Structures are given as structure tokens and as C-alpha cells.
Image: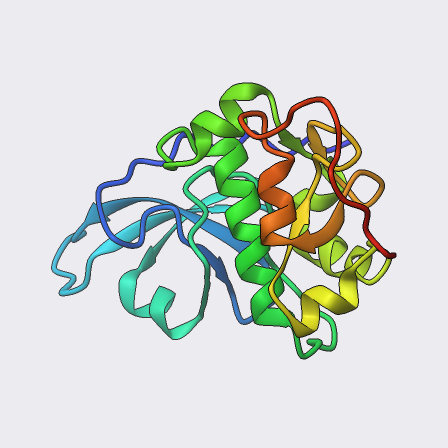
Length: 193
């Protein structure tokens, strides 16, 4: 049984640090840190951690930028690789997923104090973006989210976990009513699922 070594701490010493990348082979990695030039090279090198194997390798910036760079997740949590037919809401879902992951796990995120610091987490299944996309259509209010200004909410069911079973989509104004500082012990509205 091969156990993948844990990812080392990301050193944010360059604009690529923390970026998720996909190699042409389909392997997914994270840029750990900028190393600088090696020998007579004219290009900077970076350390890359493979999420598939745990192997750390070196790669030039040119080779990284020629590949596909995924949204930066400073928390180091989650895998944003997606290998399916992209739905029309793919970009909207990717933005929502990255924001959810970062505010729960990135201690430098401006909203971490209201999420991760309060013990709010994302289900292990949803750490993988493709699982998140697969589950979206099963969440009440999904079609309202696709076509309008609805938000993913975990407070409606009183949960501290973002998951398919604990979330719904609801209008922003209703979502605000469920926040701790607005909640008065009674919900003042109902949702049509």
C-alpha cells in the first residue's frame, strides 16, 4: 500500500505559488515555491507537488504557464481538476467552489473569521470539484441559482458543513437573515423547493 506523502507547506514567494496546475498527462499539481534559476538556465524554476503521487519535482515557469493553471487556492485544500463535459454553469460553479474552500480553510481570507475560525468546513466529498459539480443539481433551488441571484447556503438546516445533504440555494436577502447576527430564533420565510 503506497501512501502519498503529505503536501509540504506552500511558500508564497511568487505570484505562481499556490497555483494548481494540470500537466499534459492529466496529472494535477500545486506550485509549492519559486526556487529561482538553476545553473545557466534563463528561466526560473519552481517546486511542484503532485497531488496524484506526492512526488516533488522541479519545473520552469515557461513549462508551467504552457500548461493549464487552475484557480489559486491559498488554503492548499481541494482539487479543482475537472475531466467531464463542462456544463454551462461551470465557471460560476468553479468560482463558488473556490470561494467556499478558501473561506473555510485559508486563514488569510477576509471571510475566514466568519467560517473556518467558527468551525465551518466543507465535506471531504466536496474537496474534489468534480464531485461538487456532480452534486449541484440535487441541491434544492439549483435551477434558481443557475438562472438568477441565488447563493449556496448551509445555515438553512443549521449545519456547519457544506455538503449535498446540508445545503440549499436561496436568494441573497434570505441568506443574510440566517446569519448569526440576523437570526432571532424564528425563520421569517419559507422556500419553495
